[in-house]
Amino acid sequence: MHPHPLIDDILDRYRAQLGKDYSRYRNHAQRVYLACRQLDAEPVREIRYALAAAFHDIGIWTDGTFDYLEPSVRECRAYMEAQGMGGLAGEVEAMILWHHKVSRFKDEHWPAVEYFRQGDLVDVSMQLKTFGISRPALTAMRDAYPFLGFHMFLIKRAFRHFLRHPLRPLPMFRR
Image 1 (cartoon, rainbow, N blue to C red):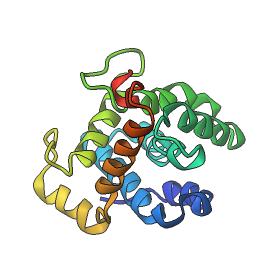
Image 2: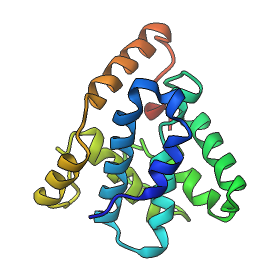
Image 3: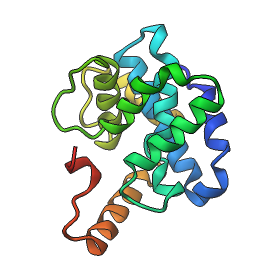
Image 4: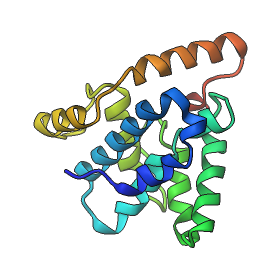
């Protein structure tokens, strides 16, 4: 089980914006990536999972909002275009936009979007939902990339969003 160096390379560009949350988010992104690779070892999707993992929540920090899906896609698109990876945009953007979908995902970007959705859910559920990933693999992910309060951070942000925008549902409930 190996982390992806591209995730660290990308997130280092956002270190100042991430501030004290840098390690929390970095660990979350690496755990999501590792979960995706446990669910789908297809080599062609490795870079796609790394890109989506690095960018999927980044809009929380770049735009200072918990309504972060579109800002996250925007940041990812700009990076992919600058790096000559525009051909991956459709699939990676779909992974980011649909990673909170409650039910299974199925369209032209299946199975990558579905595996990414599952990988994020494995981590957000604190590994209660496993989608068949072995306990030793989950323990190894958590040991290598500890939670560091990431889940409490999410709960606080969600609560703050609710207080400021009581009639605007969280992004995961709008898609």
